[in-house]
Image (cartoon, rainbow, N blue to C red; front, side, top):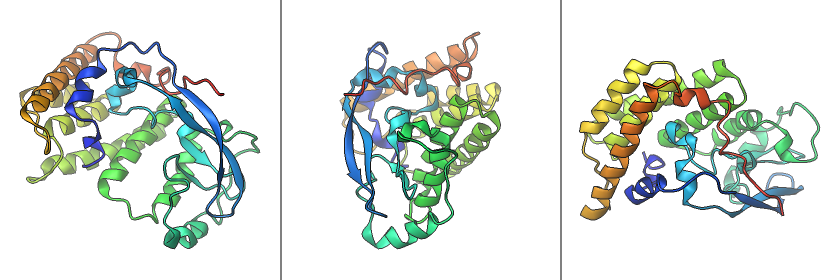
Length: 266
């Protein structure tokens, strides 16, 4: 699972060293929609720091910018939705299929700024778009986890649960593979996180305890980085177990996780 592997051991280790009391800044930039040539003004990232890896969304193994409202670009004319890094990089040969997928798409209200439309609504359109982009199972697992996160923030528990169940099923499939390239220790952490947010604390703790006993392994890391990753993950796992057993469970932050939208528009 390549997207799970994006954060190496060094990032895992430093994540806990920073406070979340920092601002993520954004500034407006004009983009041309590849579907209908409509000019749109979207927000692009100005600055952020390593503190983003200590935000509460870590308990769902999700991090900025996927947790941020401005990340999901929405064309005001054709209603194309993509991750911000994909909007002007869509494969030309896929544009006709995307255009067809958007034929009946509507949004819930008129808007001046794309961020006025809820992220969950944008994600539902985005799902139609990416279904024609040949994304793999790994990409879709992360996508379902992202949907669960944003449904949770918008107080839509049923839809959040449905998305998290899909993510969990895919993670469990990966865990059963004998030759998975994903670090098993990290897969167990993600599995535990989805179980916790699905109210299965017993299953979550069992996964986390298995994770503690599992050595961190990741291709391309030298011995020192693997050691740092092991220490960083163990620290996160021990913290997670403690939090699940406390009266401040991570899932209680579902609607109030404030890490996503700290920004200054320039």
